[in-house]
Length: 387
Image (cartoon, rainbow, N blue to C red; front, side, top):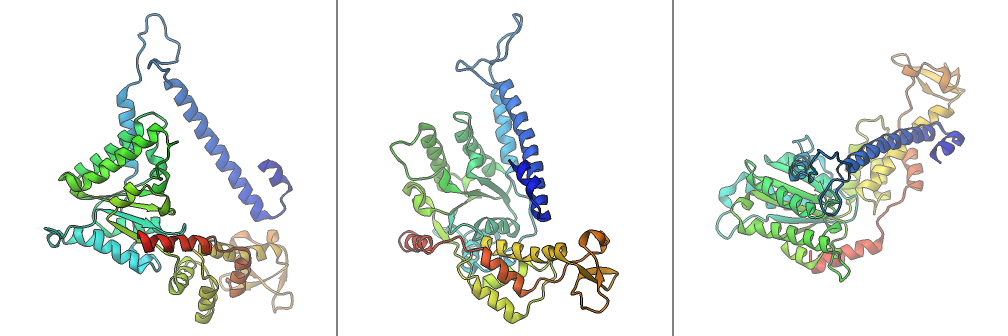
């Protein structure tokens, strides 16, 4: 279907995007076929024997437990995030959330002698708020602020198709974090996927996963080794979390939509590597017009605006030469205008015009905010009662 659409598409940018999508799908299909072959070669029947045909002189062997143990160890090692360059100062706004994380994690790690006796650091923290507000970005910025091992996993990473593997993976994740040199921070994104409110229709393996995670969360208080672990989770739907999990989070931090100054900073940060001609007044106008937009929504607006000069390149019929022997679109009446289409110009010498306010106005007309007032009210109600 995508191939048929691509053949009919006349917009070069969309055509290129469809081509890239096809290449990506082809690559993913290759990975899928490889995984299917691996699963077929190691699949077990209920009695634990391989489904592959065996010679008469070949003993039937069971799936080696070490294989899965090794797989779990590799998964846990892959979750370790290298110390990056993203810092709190690079995250626009969210000052209250950043201050709460400083008090909860950074200060106890930097000044452990201050947190003794009854003054103990919060070791289980929940970040909650609308999607696209920067919860994961905050977590990654935190990993750069501290001198600790930082594990970043999604709830989907903790779910295995093998019965019993999810519980073992969770247990071994906390064990490795506890025995690792120094302190460790475990960040679990989309925690609501595995910690939703219990129902009568809940499957047995889901209950076991919840039980194991609760056991490990409780261990943060009862085990001496677990004192080296900080657990931080994120969710877009805190009201869907099981009350047993909510009670165990010692600190619940709301990550709201960006305020005016944060929106202005986001707009400027995300366009700092591009040529943009906007006055301070115009930046303020854009900040006002993006009220109610999440950080993700603003990123979408920016990307659409940045593409407007590229679209103009395709429509241009006249060009003028700039400094450095570069060519940029111009009006046919401009002095020194040269007639020609994009394909006729030297590809390495073509430069787009600067992004202007009108480009953002056009993108705002097409890209709307994705968080409704009803959703914001739910977060307000949750914060008032349980936040």
